[in-house]
Image (cartoon, rainbow, N blue to C red; front, side, top):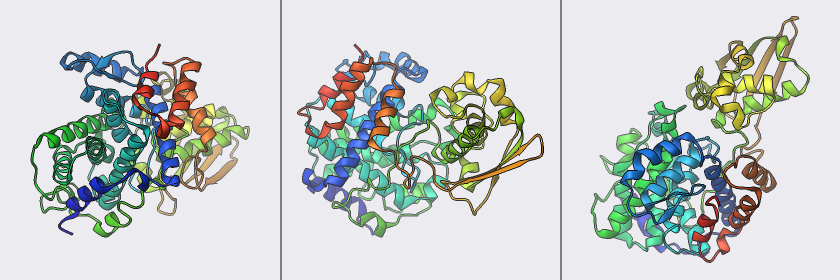
Length: 444
């Protein structure tokens, strides 16, 4: 299909808020609740302080509030900071069909916009749904080639969602929406070599900022080519070896928003090691003492070894270590933020346990599954299998569990203020001005 980009632009421009049905709206609200909790949870991370110190001096007039911070900055820097804070703990949502964190780049740009420009909750949710759906469709259409090549799709594809979501709020016409898509394509970036570092959190922030700027440039008349997605030198050709499932991309376009494939994490780390944390925690809960363990063999999907084979020396690296995932489950019986700090990485008990863990890639094990064989010092073997981990599509987190997650990760707001923000998030679709939510999320 040689007019896919134009079709996308035309569909977005024609879209109306009532196209977001009740099910999509409910899931959009869940995604935004989870996002704001993650942004507040990461607002005091060192990466945020570094970014403000390094780039704050270049910020224009400080009109935009940043979620969870007291500083006011310009809108593009607010988008960058929102993206970093919401992803730095790797606690944000994930679509397993393409392993993108779709909400962070889109919502980070939208909340930066709403911090300066009045926007109703209904229009905000509509723009968010458009951005989310665009990210997911491009991600699905180019998976696995784009991801396998080493791109971190949250950044390299998330930018499209940010650009079209902001473009929708701006009221761009079809030609200018196409230019926004083209400007997103030419700025797409983010590589998986950065997993386990601050730069991974930078990716959705960069996508949010550049997507926002793409919409501003397009509105002003900045031109691009006409086939940024499907052209012979376009995004799919350059970054995905030409893979672009056009039929899958257009299926339900403008009628069905792909929220049904989204998931919310119970653990702040790579989603493919969640099964290991849960299974090993259950072994701990069953009364197996860490001191009695001689060796641990994990049978995991090949993708787990590809993504999470790190022997960590920092908390951020621990988020992508199958060995650390097993050790925190077996030793501490949990996987909270406290398990992914530098202190936890250097905990002698966890260091000792990590050295006992081996991981074997096994094609018969699903990406949401794990088999563990634990050998005790007395020669006894304990073998357990987990088919589907908590938080994934077969066992989604409930609204109540999302509430608990929201409160458990926040340290920058007191309980009363956090509860106010949570209530606003659950009701964002009916808020008169989403800027009120942004301002409510600034620490007193």
